Image 1 (cartoon, rainbow, N blue to C red):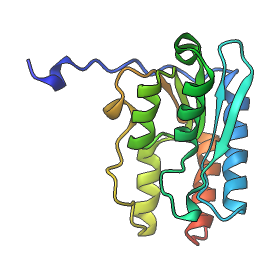
Image 2 (image 1 turned 45 degrees about the vertical axis):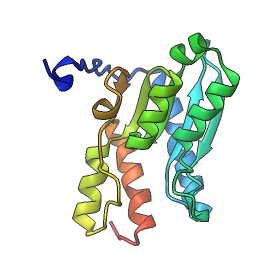
Image 3 (image 1 turned 90 degrees about the vertical axis):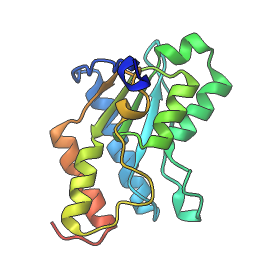
Image 4 (image 1 turned 30 degrees about the vertical axis):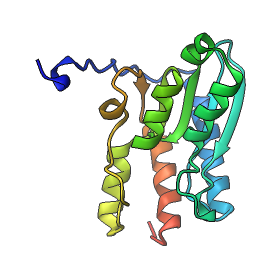
Length: 173
């Protein structure tokens, strides 16, 4: 049996009423990132008992392309939470994790990822607009971290995220 045959991808769960306000906040954080001259991505970490523990936005405009909020969440969680707390936490994000952030999430032992817009959506938008998708393969979370439960996208919020990315690239919708 090959390695790919042994990988079991976690089921994709449905969005819940609890998820929506957190995703709304992520889209607002993404808008803040764009207003600050950065790429429109925002994320937050919700602890096992429901409080928001940490939030951040993309900070790549300074030249460090690894300054993604999902990566910052993984680092923060390892420093501040026990392994059990990390496993029971939920990461909410405006856009599905990239390969780098998916790997960091898995290595940190974080729980479910809930996203407003998906990788496939972002890649379609960029293709439609003639924008280079960048140097890293656009892998979905399950392709990088198959044991992580995910939920998303949310159509209404994905439309807002699309509008933010359009503004970033000077596209009129």
